[in-house]
Length: 302
Length: 302
Image (cartoon, rainbow over all chains, first blue to last red; front, side):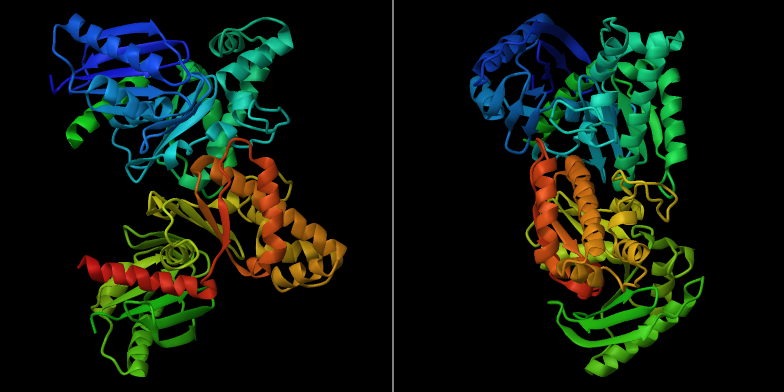
């Protein structure tokens, strides 16, 4: 069925898939543990099975195209995953590999970039020309919409998580001061545990504790939001987006976290234009919808 | 003569103008002190005179189009100078104003952005798709070439001089830590004078003194180059340009200043791609040639 696409958001542990129509309505959805191999063939095999099973579930024929997004560094022009720590991939030409396996047009992209595409086209950033989508999760990455087009630099652009925001914590990348070493969900959980000895599953319980007056949580969340303000200031000094869309579990507590970031910017900006801060509207679905949009674009290119 | 354009680089003190052919050869050149009025009419009058005088000097008819670039914040789409401290302008619709005065097609742009355009098209950045041109002068600003197109954000993009590079000096903009407060030519001269009581006319004499072992000059130049390395790291973490073109008087001593910046980056980068650092090749001519390119583009659009 030429007007349908299969969309797969491949994470380090789970594949989230859907069969979508041209309006991004899901006719069928499924999840499975990610099949891994260093050459990508295990995942290609799994994608083939998932696509068949979605079509069977929906009672349709094969989709017209398939979109797959993965974490890491993806060169979308070359259709090669340059590096993906979660999948243990280096220079895997997954776009071509999967297209040969399926005999269907394949769009291959990056999860955060695709999530941004979805937010910019059908989510919180709809209608913008110059915007940034910041995904705060285990790490922090950005999708950049500049003059109405995603800017990718072969998958190397948007590493906002590694902007130096001026603290003394060493980041996983080896540098000191990186935004994601103080403001990512994993950094918030880790720093809370360091202070209290209590485990935290991501940023959300720490934000909840801060809301209820837990002093350690208040300090950790406050550092994280100041870091985020600092990183956003740098981004907007260089790129001047009209809108910044913020995504990730941290922002489900939008009422608690957005105001401090706005206040940071209001006091830190001098001549720069204050951007509108918006919370992402597609949540966990952003990557999969972005994969669907990439597949639909691929279909319309043909 | 439709294939000729007049190109004017308007500074706070001097207008540099040329009559250029389609290959950017100058058939006539002239300079004049900048005519100023808050509404822009004095400059429009002066441009009309300069254009006539260039045509007379070259023995040609009127040019096919005129390109004018100015410092400040210029919205090139709206053809309005939003702000120019040097010209004492706020929201001057100079593109339309000049076009009405001249009865000729006018391109109106920003000096650093036009200088970057010239470096990217016919100078040190020729052939690049993703590149940045950094002009180190009284301030520090960048022109950004992203996916082969200049990114402008209505004149607000590229304010690399106001990236926080982590020092305690207060910038003219009011913020602390700005790149240009430690690495601009004026900051280098000012900091040298503060330390020694000796005046310095821009960065070049300080670099010369550093070369000859003057300790205060070595310290000031070293701070400036570390700041520049820090700012470039931030830029390339976000945008991943293949090439960074460095312009301004500081880089006439390229052999002395480029290596420390390269070394800073080599030790500070973790996963990021090392860009190629090149010295600008058009010098003082970049702005005027960029104005000419904008005028030629305007001519070919019609």
